[in-house]
Length: 174
Image (cartoon, rainbow, N blue to C red):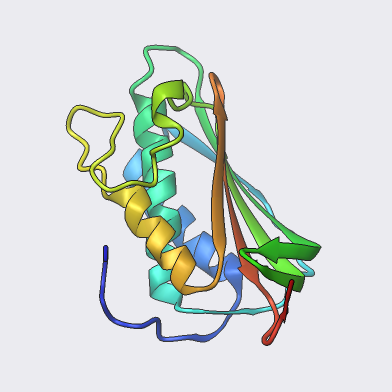
């Protein structure tokens, strides 16, 4: 098992507060080389999560995006968009949820190489020579501990990580 063996310390949390914390950390680290775009759905209710673990999960994705963007030898400015949406009637695993929170982290970096896309959530898989290959594996573990789902869609110039978190307790099995 990756990351902490400690069970999540769950509390009702505004997902936008989590994203804003990540944004403040990233803005300090990027030194103005990355534009952060916020596209939040204000109607999303609080979600039952471990705030610190979720910050770590999102931060792992955003740092990977920053590193991919900064590794490009192009003059265009890097951009990372944090988008939230509420989704209705969404299935995670075999459980149908009436309402889920969808968090998207979208970047305009070079994309994830096709040969890595099927294995990026595996431990020790990295697209960087100096990468540990643990960040996304830890992120997936955190999301799973929250009964959530993480997906990735990537092609040159555009990568989207989507995190889906249930917004209600006691969903129906399908």
